[in-house]
Length: 147
Image (cartoon, rainbow, N blue to C red):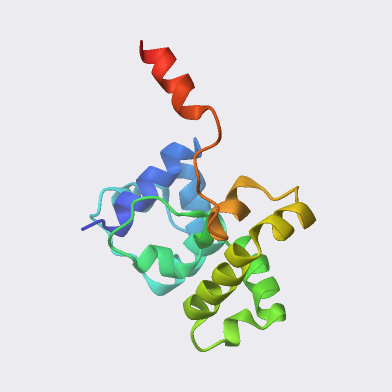
């Protein structure tokens, strides 16, 4: 189980910030910031709000006891991405995974035409759409590198 004070310490180190920066952000004394980082002082709701703002990470991350550092979707900047998805209507679809499976099936059935129409797909887009095949020549390159 990952505790909030462990997350704070990890993010301070990762971003090369000092406890005095945390103290200013939380509106507490440097000693209280140190106590928070060591788990000796409780995190209050105003502290949580200030942590969200200071680290630009959603509140849900702080409450998740399984992850030490935030993922891209935890960042407040990711809200723009979520808002964009909302504008497409995808967030209102009852079963988005089922819809994606159907789209992938259709794309696979029309693979040649689809790839010819969209040759600039990024590797990430290709993975999402189900194009995870090994690039031509990769196996030979790996074999020759090991041989």
